[in-house]
Length: 120
Image 1 (spheres, rainbow, N blue to C red):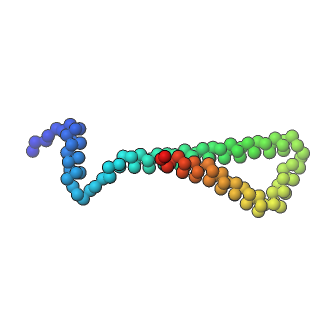
Image 2: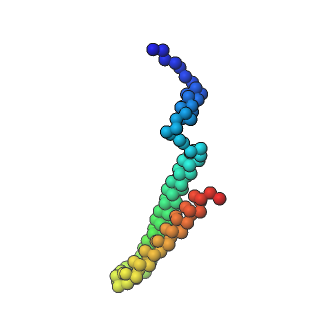
Image 3: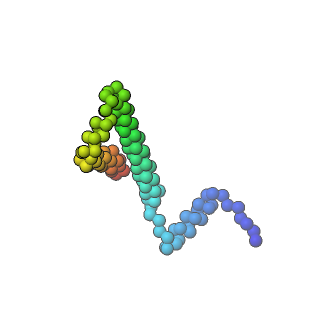
């Protein structure tokens, strides 16, 4: 049996002929664009989640440093006083922080994702 050496153009032409002759397998004409859009959306979502995580870590770290500076420079019962405040108003503080996180998540990720992913 003789093997025939084919170059890439011959392979592309034969593959194209085989796909065009078969009625079982139809590919949309804009398949590369659809794949590109899907990959672009996935990369955008990963980027937005990473940015949100970095901003959250920076905000929490800054708040921790700020509280630590007040505790270090302030009174001795600073932490105990604010711990008792947080303990007595735990549910409203938890609700306020949860609503804030949801609003920031929606603003930083969902709205930016929808505005960038839809072509104009």
